[in-house]
Image 1 (cartoon, one colour):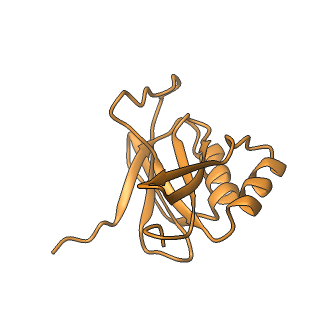
Image 2 (cartoon, rainbow, N blue to C red):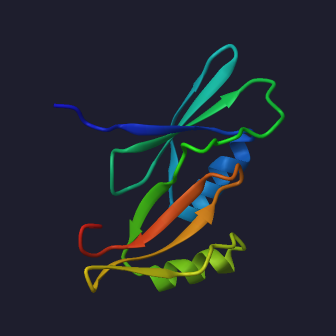
Length: 131
């Protein structure tokens, strides 16, 4: 049986990305591994062993294109309204809160946020299948 352990994104500025993910999602550096032409930075939160791997390629200056296949990362929070207000107060400019129903019943309350490299993050209220 497999166990998901991390998701990787390529970023331009390690310090900027580390600051964003700590401020926005409470992720902290679990480990940094430096190679000759790139660095891997593993970020982890308190509630899970799943990590976000930031890859920083040496000498890269132009932004990466996520392409049409990339969707988003997703996190759950206990109080969506408070989290939206907190991120807004930090100047991180989250999108507006959305609600989605399925078969006439509430399915999800959520909003999106973009990191410094343009990757989208879905912040979902902890309920139903999103616990």
